[in-house]
Image 1 (tube, rainbow, N blue to C red):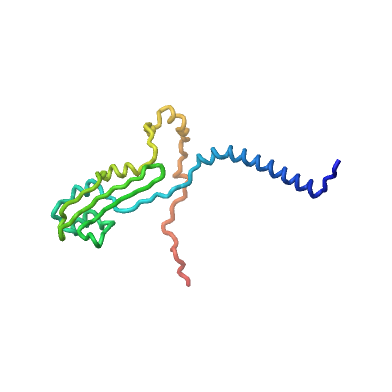
Image 2 (image 1 turned 60 degrees about the vertical axis):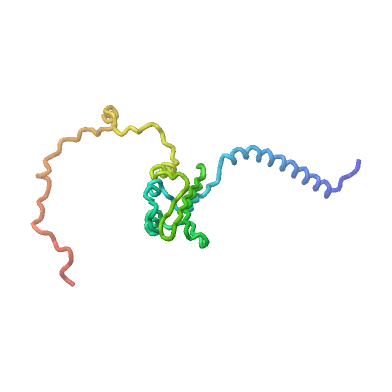
Length: 184
């Protein structure tokens, strides 16, 4: 029988131990992979541009000056030096768990006056706010009144009849001492 030197047997044992630990790690990794896919990282909400509502678009009229349009919609997001007669209002929002939204409105000017405008169908302010509220709404309205039987359970016991307090109470002084001391 050949004799294995101690160095070789130690290396063989280390290699065997490494293989066993790797096999154990892979089974642990498989079992925790399902738990890790359920946990999602927080994604920051990204809002860019100018929100333009249906009410704001309804207030626009051809022939308005640039300043009147700016008063209604605010400053445009995109102003191009090469297309000074065109203003673009772009709005995008990306939120976790909600489809990304993008809306665009383009205004065309003839000199200082609004010539025409076109763009996506804009939501009303109320509709837009409703899309931002992602809390789950339950159909059940909470009970706001305490039923009579529960009220009897929590009602305090009848207090004892008060003893004549006027006889036990000391009379009030005619005057009170000054708040600040007079001696300095």
